Image (cartoon, rainbow, N blue to C red; front, side, top):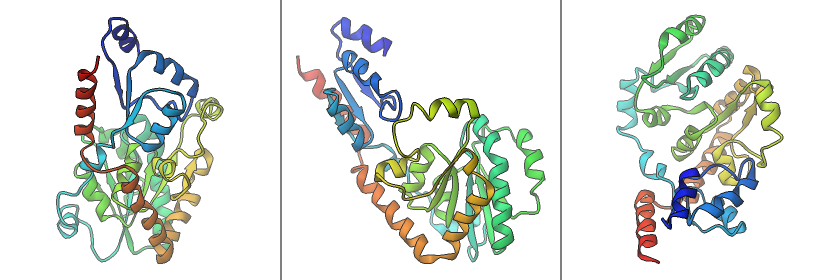
Length: 281
């Protein structure tokens, strides 16, 4: 915003692409944004309505993930690559990408997997991790659950999603990617008690998961803080594994998310918008 403010003073047109989540918390900041930019290019349709209400120039350009989220191989090939049994259920354990997030959630994910395995022994688990994750920090935790059928992979996350019957995932962009793959999920989120105590008074939305925000209702379960415990998480996963109609209902709602994000070509639309701004005086 400092750069935008300086550019504006010099008469340089400013477009803000992928703006801050002012619609989620500290919404009063939208007035400051409106003073310093000429156009907001936003990823979600509800953002367009938010900025329009504040009289800030805005255009919904679509989300680049619509083009980026896709498989690179068929499911049979993916099962072979990840050493998964195609004849049993697969549960994904997605701890997030940040180191602090992984350390905070991994034990809860593994404890949830253990409870699932006790009641549904005919299943397997897969954990996708970025190659940058240092395994020496995680290995002591993983060693405690070496009796579980868990595969750890470091690539092709969308192919991993395609292999999963359901996923337990940290909140974040990965939930939108999972929704675009129409894979049922449970969203979990944990932060320090102090941070959560502050944040819950600032957040102005009803949901934290992007699929639920886009849908305008809870289509996949969200479990926060103390509610994100192995018992609650495993119960929801087991419900999806045991109740085919419930699983289909969740899948059907997730399939609608792609429609809400618009057509492909989001990056091209941003470029076109910038070109249009350059043509006006």
